[in-house]
Image 1: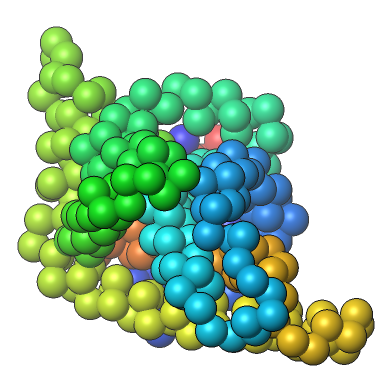
Image 2: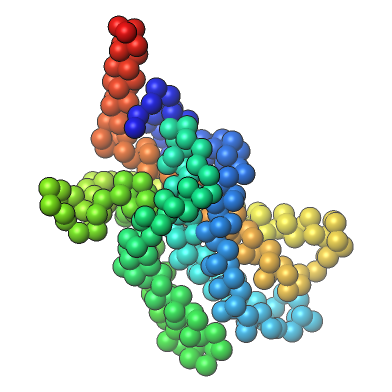
Length: 297
């Protein structure tokens, strides 16, 4: 499975270097990663537009005020945050394969996703509360039961925030390492145990990285939102904030930020494996062994 060269140099990196490397990866693989996000995020984006459609029906004469617009920003942000791990699954698979210079096709990505879809929806959807929050949001579509569904969505977001802060690389464990959900004969390592073992002793470091990623994400969303709005003003003379500013530009800015942070998360997973398991040494030993074999033969 290991080859002489990897797409990304295998060595330990600092946090700032990870973010810088993420920019290079995003530039080099922009097209395939963008397609992977579109395929993964499209169902969630459609769901969000539907479930938040009642509060999108506001008075457009009230340009910047009104509870509806602030509610739309709040709920859209919460939903995208909850959906991000599921929506970026194809990106994770692509990055895992391209690391060893394998360029998978869209069909191969979907096939690989299907093999781990059950565990992914169980752990990310059920255990971490994403599906419960989406069901609550769907129930609240008509805004008849506003209090309880809103409470459930907030609780799910807080639960997911804590879980991802302490153990952020669950997606990578499920999609790339593929341990069974239950212990099988001859192997006691399950997804839950592997996830716990990988993050053991690194919870504080992961939480600090999550804070940094959250701050970067907040600034990125704001920058993209304002930049796209400014471009609309220049190209289409849309000077004032209209409905599309919130229902189109905001989700676009959120998903673009999720796209970049998914790359950062994968690189963080790679760095954690190097630090924890000495993956760099293993790869170098295998590379040297392969070179010696070729020399002898």
